Image 1 (cartoon, rainbow, N blue to C red):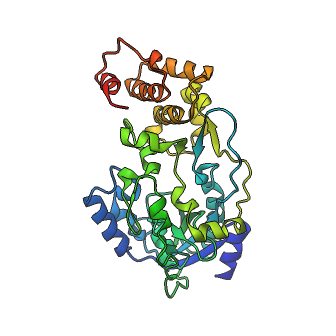
Image 2: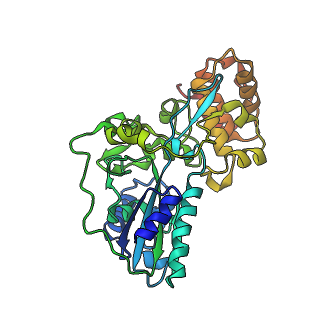
Image 3: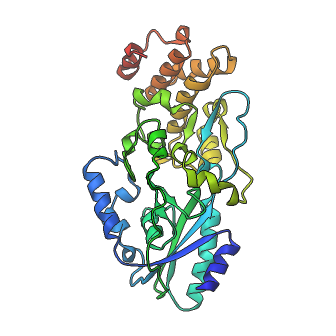
Length: 356
């Protein structure tokens, strides 16, 4: 086992634990309960097929063990650039999953050389990674539903190797380290943490940004400058804040901020090439443009010629969904003079008539 730990550490996978490959009964019951309660709000991933994503042997027949690895993605945030920019959640500043996969693949290669089957899963709906990480004694579940690592916090991506090898497993879970603290609950801008460890996806800004369709008016101003993801429940978490600097990610080619004008001016191909590492529903760039329009309405300056040019272009766009959000952004910036007068699309008309 120590050899596997050493291999993982060579690739920046700083925490490695093991659990058995039995069905994740607790996670299965919770996924089904929350889905039945509508808390998933259409979110798929491990909600899509809870029976499959909680049974490791659906992915690797005869699996006996799961190695779980965690790799830090924390990097200090630079100051925001000049001009209208959108904020990106820290885990998406670059592709942190690729180096994690490389480390786990190295571990899997060693297991295969020893004659065992071993398959890597990272950012994959085949397995509930936080649950196996908890069972592998890697961390505890925080009240924000993130996995918190003792002495390290939650700025980590998780992945695992499901294997037929009989490896020594953790004997007891990491004890809860949250105690009476509820800072994440109180800091959530939309009250999405409806109970300790339970998230209402319909109120979670990270999901609202990814979800297809028109963004509910209730959440547009609250989104602020966010264009992808939300870190609020982690940035106030005492263990995460306290230990972040000790677990710096080695990646330096990062993009914490995105020019909203560049996003709105980009072609489909350019947008997917530059920001394709993000989850974009159906790989459709219009959802990223939608987010950029909302952010522009929140942080743009009405006297900025580039802002006015972009909004004018999108108010005349052939996509009515984008025109809806351009109307909202223009009105929010007090640029009512740009609003269309002859648009007859029902969605746009409704937006024009709505109370800002």
